[in-house]
Structures are given as C-alpha cells and as structure tokens.
Image (cartoon, rainbow, N blue to C red; front, side):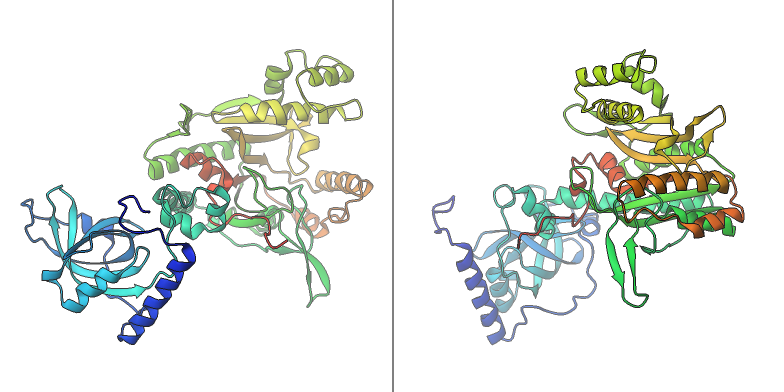
Length: 500
C-alpha cells in the first residue's frame, strides 16, 4: 500500500503498460504524446525573478514555461504540481474552473516524469510560494517509465553512473556539479585568452604514443595500412607549434590511457596543456596559481572549498613551495638521503612501503613519495626539483643535472598540474629518448620502443625556451566542487561491460 493507504503499489512493468495504454488513448483522441516545438519558453529561474503582487492570489505577469513534471498533488478540481527545467523548479496550479475542459482533463491525466509546456499567470500562495496559475497545457513528451524516488529509487552508485540521465533528474545537486564544470572550462578559456594564449587542436590519432609515459589504446588505420594510437598527451605536437612560431598556445583536449579505473583515474579524460615561449616553470607556477584562485572566485564565489567532514581546501595564493627531497625527508626522516640504499629499503619496509632490495634506489624513494608524500599534500603544494630520471622532457636544474626544473602541483592528495621548464636542447633530448628507448626495449614494450624522429627534427630547427604545463581538468573540477570521485565529475564515466 502507499503511504496514505489509498492506492495499491503498482509494479514497474504494470506502470509501463499503463503508460503505453495512455499513449494509445492520447493518439486516439488526436493528442500527439510526443509533440513538436513550444514557442517563447522562459527559463524558470527568470520566471521566478518576475515581480508578483504580494497580495494573496493577486494575478501577476504572464509566463510560459516548459520542463519535466517532477511532483503532483491533488486529483479533484484543483491540482498542484512541480515543474523543473535545468535552471530550477516552479510550482504549478491547475484549476478546473480556470482551464478548458479538455485542458484540465489532460493536466489531470499527466504522470510524473512527463515533459510539458504551460502558459498562465503568476501569483503567490498562502504559503508564500511563487506559483504559475495554468491556463493552457501541452504534452511535449510522454514519460513511459516511472522516475526513481529521490531517496529510495536511485541509491545504487553504479546505477547513477550508468544511467546518468536519471541521476540528473533525481538529484539537482548532481546537475549543479556539471553546470560548475561547464563554467570552470569557460572561465579557463577566458583567463588564457585574456593573457594572449591561442587555443589550438592537435591530432588525437597519432603514429607514435608520446608526450607522457602511459599505455595507449591501439587501433588500425585502414587507409594508411598502419597502427595508430589514441593520444596519451598532446605535448609533442604543441611543442612543434612553438618551433613554428606560435608563442602562447593551449589545448583543452581528450586524452586516453589504457590503464586502471579508480576514484582518480578514467581511461578517457580531459587535459589542459599550456605552453609559453620565453617562460619557465616559475612562469607556469604564477599562471596556475592565479588561474585556479581566479576561477574559484568566479565560479564558486570563494577560494575556500568545503570538502566535508571539516576539510576546507584553501586556494588562496600563494601556495606552498617545497622540494621533492624536503618532502621525502619529512616522511622518511631527515637522514633519508644520507643512509645507504639497503638502509632505505629497511626503513621503507618499516614505514609500510612495498619496497625490496631488487628495486633501484630511485624507485624506493619514489615509492615513499607516491605513498606517503603525495597523498598528504592536502593544501595546494608546489613540489619542485624532481629527479631527472622521472621526467625525460624537462630541462635540468642549472645547479644540479640530476634534478629537473619542474613542479608538480598537489591538492587534496592528487597531482593536479605538472609543469616544466621545457627541454629545448635537441642533443640532450635525443639522449634522453634513446635511454628511454633502450629501457622500453629491454622491458619488451613494443609500443613505446620507437623514437619520435620528427619531433627531434623539429627541435633541431630551434625551439624557444618555454614553460609548459598540463592540468587535469577532471581533478580540478573535483577540487572546485568538493566531489569525492572522478566519476562524479564525468558525465559518462567508463563502466565495466555488463554483457560479459
């Protein structure tokens, strides 16, 4: 029985059959259940801003609205309902005495979930609610399936991701996240355009998978009779544009990595890559620090973002600066780099790290960094001066060739934006590529065991010194919206195939 003990519970398949019968009935009566255009529709948020006489029941301005009916109350001579569009919700009031007989009969027959258009006048109810007194109603799209209940019908997280359309209907706060995502991307473009950067597009299908260390998706190009790869990064093509004379470029792009799926990784993701000639990683540091704080203020109205349970991420500049070695010593001990490699392995094991004597000394330290340092960079932190072996495309530090002039911006335990003082020496770049080539070849990697000769040729023509940076847009949206998972900020995240 229902809550008011008046109507028996109807099973889902029975509801579906009932709504299909209504479609046939509508058509028999000359009503199109899947109508055409509905002219002069106003956003509900704009309708709610209209001036309405404060006197109870006094007629206000006319309004035309369209959207999905998400609630309905009363079945006598007057009916209240809630209409929702992407901008908000508006209460409707339909009275038999104020509509045509056919119009009221249609309104009475509508189901929750139906998409309708309404025309009428605004007034304020006894409860102070702005309401549209319906004069005309048009059925625009009949909902054949019952919507899930807000608190009972769509609680399964995986169902929410698989059927995002239902998630958006049932949870307005989810729609708000994606509205913010759109606003964030718009403000990124505005910010960079105001600083003289030009947006460009580079290939998503590439003959070599370069610009990052990752496993690519492989496909076959019939026309060229060759394998091609979905890009793992646009970096090497954007640097070719620096060679060609574009001095400030960026690309908001989709990249693909054939790797795991978890709270922070999706195989298809959105990146922002930025390159600025005659700059370096310090120029990129100022750029990203200013960009994030500016966007936070414009989109969120604050630089202090609430992530729940008392955790506030403060995006107010300046962000903390610390070297890779300083942070490793904070977690591994002040003498971490003074003890022997064997002692580092032993200490790492005591700290709970998955390390052993067969690992290189760099891998042991990087395990400490990835497991104990990076996850604890909650407030924005620029990690600088990383080991050169980790980043073959970066310029060495002038005072120590074993380190590279880079930073990694970590926020809330995630890497948000790595940036380099870009390597523009073609001789050193070829040497780095060859070292990487030999390592990949020895490990049996058939995808990454080729050197990008065209890119090296481009460098040999001369690339200006430059700062370059990649920004994980999905992760940045997580930071700015307080979301918990990357799946909460991607409309259609990758899911396992249920057919298998």
